[in-house]
Amino acid sequence: MNQPFSGFSKLSKEEKINWIAEAYFSTPEQAVSLLKKYWNSDPKIQKLHDEFIENTITNFYIPLGVAPNFLINGKYSTIPMAIEESSVVAAASKAAKFWSTRGGFKTTVINTEKIGQVHFIYQGDVSKLELFFAQTKSKFFADTENITTNMQKRGGGILDIELRDKTNLIDNYYQLHATFETKDSMGANFINSCLEQFANTLKRESQNFELFSETEKDIQVIMSILSNYVPNCIVRAEVSCPVDELEEKHIQNPHDFAERFVQAVQIAEVEPYRAVTHNKGIMNGIDAVIIATGNDFRAVEAGVHAYAARSGQYSSLSHAKIENGIFSFWLEVPLALGTVGGLTSLHPLVKLSLEMLENPSAGELMQFVAVAGLAQNFAALRSLTTSGIQEGHMKMHLNNMLNQLEATDDESLQVRKHFKHHVVSHSGVVNFVENLRK
Ligand code: HMG
Image 1: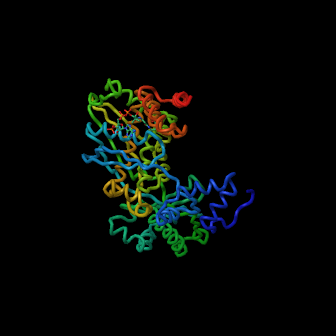
Image 2: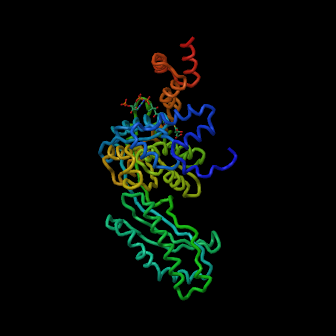
């Protein structure tokens, strides 16, 4: 293939599959058969999935697991997690069980403000632009009333609109920087619709502003789009208990453990190489719940990492301390989530996941997600500062290795029996299976 295929999108699904199979696979029939094996047997469900995206050829499975025993603000929940990486669900479950007997997780939604911007170029006197904005501001609200009426009924809407001078960054660059409350929706469509109307109002009203010269009237809107950076849409999750109560099978000296744990967090606070991996561990938990509940993990990832770098240096999202004999561990993350709209009412497993969480509001979902992130971080740091990560990770990875080796049921049984008492390693498992097969 060294020329573009015009009209690919117009082919039927069957034609697309056949074309792909012929173009890229040495055994096209096998490729077609594999793609079809992953179709849902119910044509209605398959059609639904086909239409989530474009050019769909099959489904790409990610397991949906559950982590039980999460005691959050005094109430037990089971958290759904969609993720392909072994040991994440086990780690979250273990941390949930651990903290359930030590007071559980406490969460607080600190604020829920979303942001959108109209980026534009204005060539002229800034004081005239400021006067224009002050006189026009109410029109931005009036012109978007048809978009905002329902959101206002739910208690949301446009919170404020500011004119921001960004000419220190790019010549003649300004913004309308708007803040929104979008209640239980993530709000992307609502915000973008408002912003596009702001842009129209801006262009129309600038034509009518008498103080503007012809050049000043010629405002160029570059784009209107929400921001996935939401530093004022923050949730906090925390755990704490007396240091003595940290004792369990892997934590024989709780004081030593608590100190090492706090030091591990401090390293992530000051050392970006460590902070990225530390936060990746947090995102193991966060992304898994975000995906299971039909939210946009790319938006959350981008916003969370920007937040982690807000001081100018990338740093840990979580923090820990020991004060007066009390160990505390907490996390604050920006999360713009929705429990209505988008995939939430379309994807059957998203609906099921939300029902498992007792149909939370967006604020409640923020709390589940933050707790999953903190639990995951606790589990990883507990392993890292005690036995090392490989022991538990490889124990959970054993199934993948057995599948890779196409082990029989009997071989799997013997491998599991042997590695109950031996550290799991890839070469160890391969050697053991090879010996069995000799
Ligand atoms: P363990 O102590 O050997 O487990 O831990 P256990 O067999 O004694 O079971 C204790 C509990 O753990 C269970 O209670 C479960 O809650 C859970 P129970 O259900 O029996 O009442 N658990 C499981 N849940 C579901 N399925 C299982 C299972 N096994 C245990 N098969 C464990 C084993 C893996 C949990 C532990 O070693 C651990 O937490 N390890 C950390 C693993 C981890 O963090 N994985 C994330 C991937 S690594 C990574 O990408 C991030 C990293 O780089 C981040 C960073 O650097 O900060 C590490």
